[in-house]
Amino acid sequence: MTPMTDPGRTRRFSRSVAFAALLGYSAWLVFPMVWVAYSSLKPDDAIFRNTFALPSASDLRTDNYARAWSGAHFGGYFMNSVVVTGASVALIVSLGAMAAYALARFSHPAGRVVFGLMMAGLTIPAQLAVVPLFFELRALGLLNSRIGLILVYTANGLPFAIFILAGFFRSLPRSLYEAAVVDGCGEFSAFWRVLLPLARPGLVTVAIFQFIGVWREYFYAFMLVNGDTWQTARTLPLGLANLSIAAEYRTEYGMLFAGIVLVTLPILTVYLALQRQIVRGIAAGALKG
Image 1 (cartoon, helix red, strand yellow):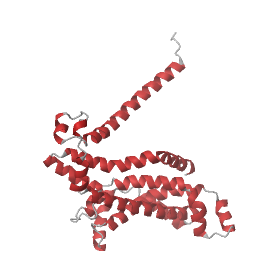
Image 2: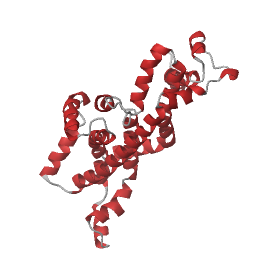
Image 3: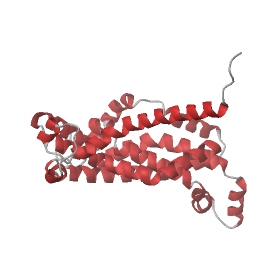
Image 4: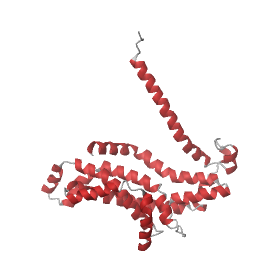
């Protein structure tokens, strides 16, 4: 006869193994970010001599950030990223909310076709669209400009926004719309005053995901604004790529790591500050969609 095992002991052992595995995976992910952060405060020779050693308190190189900000033009890249990301996210959320409301509120065969085309946009790789986008922006005179990049990011982010927000609007009771109409609201007024505030979790979720995606996007920026010789439209990912190429020849890895921190810090700050809203919005969309 086989000895009986204690279910509680087996469960505790399984949890311990799972906890150890997750802890090791977290350390594997977090350590490179921590290493880049403290290496950005070290001189270049110290990075090569003692790669994983902490920086010396008497020789902290905070000037790596100043050199990256001014010498590597990260200040201009940062402002371009702020303008492009802010405008793109605002357009994606506003246009996506209106389109999702119309597609969810009105039942029409054409609406189902439009929604299907929007969902098909989620499956098209960026590499297939960049060539016609390049020639189209060049014909419109928007190549190597922030406006052209904003329009591309907006069009690229709308399918995801419509997919998320349509589920929220479909879940709202029709009685809310009817009550708003009885109170004297028109179609747009009912949408703006009554239904849109109820979709706030979805709006926040879309805004956060699009902010992260646009802020770190490199492919479209490289293909559409890399020819900007005056650097009036280049974003942070392009600046970081140029800095990484220069660092290989000038061994300025401290400045390179400082640039990586400058690019990553806004994303990390937004995620840590709004992670509860992200989880709440995804959970609500899964239940309501």
